[in-house]
Image 1 (cartoon, rainbow, N blue to C red):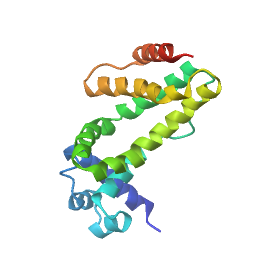
Image 2: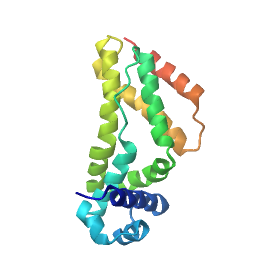
Image 3: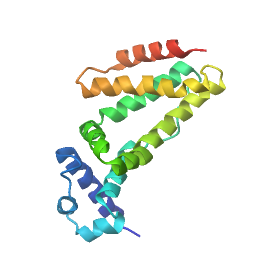
Image 4: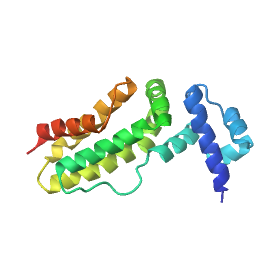
Length: 183
């Protein structure tokens, strides 16, 4: 129905402008100009700035492929942690996430849209990985959300505060997380 090249150009322009100026300053006119399309091309695809941005973010955020199943709790936690690091290390995500968090405090509709289309798919993917450890008897089901918090939050914190994150850090964090929740 829609030309995929035009849709990609619009989504790319929207994310680029979001990175450059934040959500509040992003306009449909600016996106149309950057993508070299008319505003009608945007509005045929998305009825609002919010929908357009959520679509663009979802393209950057939805994990590709199935959740990891390494055969061990440690391996699964490390794979989820690596995926979180890879996502949060994307320069576009690093640039827009703090702004979106702040804007979400002021805009509950944005907060819900980001949760629905960006956060929940990533959490669902990670839960699927950790559910394998539950099935193997390595992790209590009630600890899955805690492990996710312990997996993602430290990586996010360090990356947003210009602290180094490397393989050694992720390995150590994995060991501490797994050591704290083993059944």
